[in-house]
Length: 185
Ligand code: AMP
Image (cartoon, rainbow, N blue to C red; front, side, top):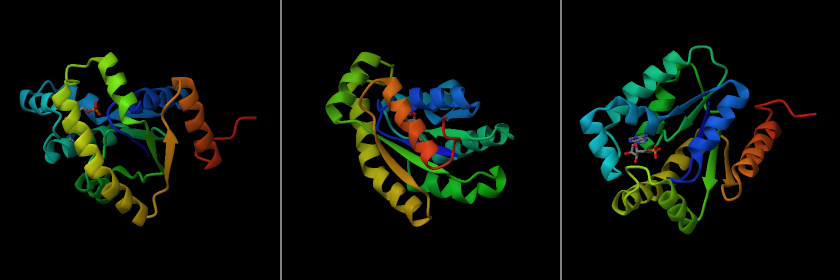
């Protein structure tokens, strides 16, 4: 399992999808799966930028991990977003049989994030919802990283600024260095 961290607009989804397509892995985006539920209570949380109740996320992520079956690796995008969700991921390991190979934190300065979100213009990219989402991210990221670090999970911070291709190349190089993918000859 490879986990992408980064604030809204950091490029987690684009990078996760490219990586999955290139290696035949499964990209699991919590945000996308929540949007797909069409559940009005869930969509109301998304609209405000707030986290959806954890039970809902555990149910959705649990099913998604089960249905990934024997796919070699899954890429998590937008999960965990809290210490409780990270704990769930470790505790449910006996159900899904996957451990975290690497956490990749995509670092992008706030000004660039705001510009990217302005251009993207998704329904939940209102100034109010963006503030809530960035606030949650800043508050939750370090406790999650501390906890994963304590459990021996490798963490790498990569520069998320640059073209999609440049960032992808940096991710591939990191995965190759750690022997998660074979080195290109
Ligand atoms: P994203 O597509 O990652 O930008 O997520 C969009 C929205 O989905 C977030 O602002 C939250 O409202 C919700 N969401 C995404 N991931 C989670 C999560 N792990 N736990 C709770 N809510 C989430």
